[in-house]
Image 1 (cartoon, rainbow, N blue to C red):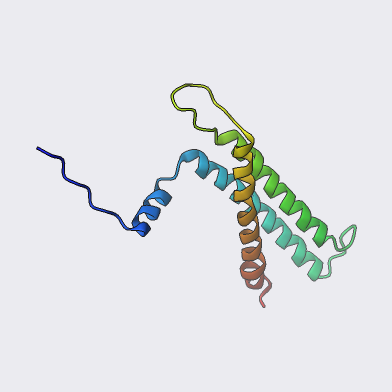
Image 2 (image 1 turned 90 degrees about the vertical axis):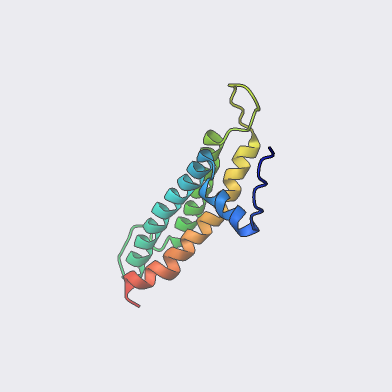
Length: 132
């Protein structure tokens, strides 16, 4: 008796299944970048609203410096955490291997996360909070 042939899935079904069953280390790495980006984005929003509201903060208007620090921190955390939690596959064995490729994966995953969170905070959340 032969086994039944599984039905052929569409490309959308395949991608949806991959999305639902992502490997835990990858989910942790993306989630860590997302959490840091959201916290930093909300801190930037608070600072931006305070500056626009006329608050006299020490140092004056440092929004550009804050943005540079925000991007740097999100990229650094994304790189380091991904390097820590996403080891290279080693086949059979108990040895954990980390390489610069894991760090590069984290860096390149953190770039769009950083950008998308910042756009969402400044273009969606800020008008809602500021009442404009």
